[in-house]
Image (cartoon, rainbow over all chains, first blue to last red; front, side):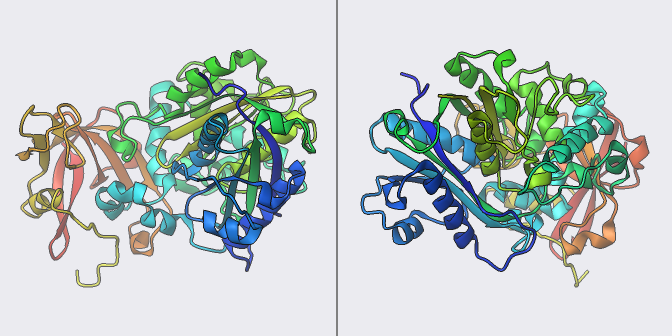
Length: 381
Length: 135
């Protein structure tokens, strides 16, 4: 038994993305959730499964605010930035088992106005080992923990900072076409190369934003999805993957391979599609290098060839693989990848602001904590 | 040394011998008492044979550079005065890796495979951190 086409995205919603708010994460999460439910043509009380992103609203908040009378699932998928895509697998499983009909994935955060990343990671249980052995040395934030992965890739394969810049520049170009992106002024490779160093080889423009806002997605049983407001977006394949030594990158046998490498063959096999059939890809972009590495782990090119793959605008709307058409975490907003799922659904519905012409099949990835990965492949129904 | 304002470890009974070792200028690694596999960072169970019996060995202190980063931005105010600083990922001949700051090394000279040697820096009462310098 497979989860192939066991569920479809029926609704997506977002708040305005901001850098500065006095609102609570709960309020932002509920606003985005209401938008997603409304987009599907459902009532909030129709939701019978909840998979909220960690550290935010809990099931009790939704029951209370939405008047849900018969909630059948409250779950979380604690994989950091891979959580949102991993929760698609969880949603499909409970739908296929007949437990739920409409599962709501949601996130709300004040990453800009609330605690910043260097403070937040000190409080996360999955960073406990790092907290004892690496943070006291001054290795605290993801930029510092991931930089040695990027450096190792550069040393082994000759990957360059200008290749990272290609990703930053293309992503910003896509953000410039969005009404709801926080960074819309186009940048050049020279701008990237002149941006200040954060933790070598990662410069400021290699790093994602800290953002305030919320995003949400409704996944419905296929027999219910057909009667709702929007064209359903069918999930063809989905999988999550965890890297070796998930809680300490330092100890990982191969620093240049992520958990996604384990998930990708499973999701592609389930979907029954080839890489050449992917019209658009929303790839988790906490850092430019992480996009490059995932392109390899997804199988779009061999390990070590990601640098060449991204050159010459290959990830642009007219490139060989349009990537992060909404501007991603680098330039739209850091919504931990929930905004990537929202964008993929819009692309496959044909309602995106930077639309890939006739996009029929696409994929979305998540990457989180220190290497967890998730992948979903979808098609318009 | 009294006004130490950086992050400090909170050792557990499983990890305390590592920190005690550093205070004695010894780099200690946990080893499975049944199958002999060395593991780092310290933890309760051996992933090779699932034994919960462990003892500790003194590492040679030698290593080679696996990767690195040079940090130019302080993610915690206590590290601001150290900028920029080099964080090394080091392969130990015992079969594990560790992270430590570089001492006396220039970023431009760093290479994968470069030999380094552990040293010890007492940073406050009861806390010694490992560093690596040129071998």
